[in-house]
Image (cartoon, rainbow, N blue to C red):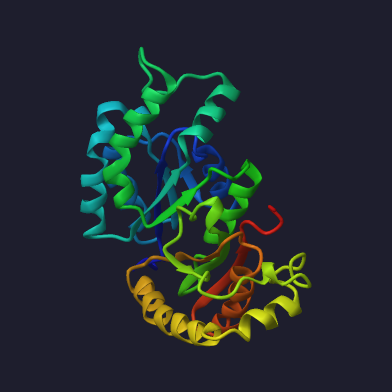
Length: 290
């Protein structure tokens, strides 16, 4: 009998203007076979091709979007049907209305659902149609703050080592005053700790500096928080692995994303790097923003 090779089928969808073409290009660079603007009804034969013994296409990505018109309405049902018998994941790309408007204006193209209305009317229609599919997504990437290079790097980090077991975890610090990361799977609040900002000798330093890190970790409850948070994440990440959720974003926030959250993320990363089958990437979203 022909040898069965591991297969991976990814459905790439999301808001128009959120970066589907950039993601498709990045996946192709990683060796994926990418099919663009695929009608949802064609997903069944595509998956059959991917899982066929001896298939030369073990990693297939299908870009599906509202350009499929009425055919797109069946996407959620088709994904549910395919998941009942095969490993199929959904990557959903989104961005704020303001970011999408800016991108459409830059390329001077109408929104595919704009019709006789405004650009915002088209975006609103698309969000409504995408709601059910978004709820099915295994990975959600908010591209609001990304340029095309940053988005491509993110996709590479997520999908470059898909042959390895376990979950790839992005540990992200952020500032609440800039908003909670919309793609975070788990969010924790570090504002229960005293803010180093109010210590004159620490104000200009960051959580990457030893002086700030030592100050934060010396505060009452800091190490207890890390112990409890790490213990909580252990069964969560194991469950993600069982459910084939291969990427998770764990975010810790403080007021400005400069001191407490940065120090705690750095410490948590050191602890989690020894976990089996877990890959760690650290991101400090708002560091240097002040």
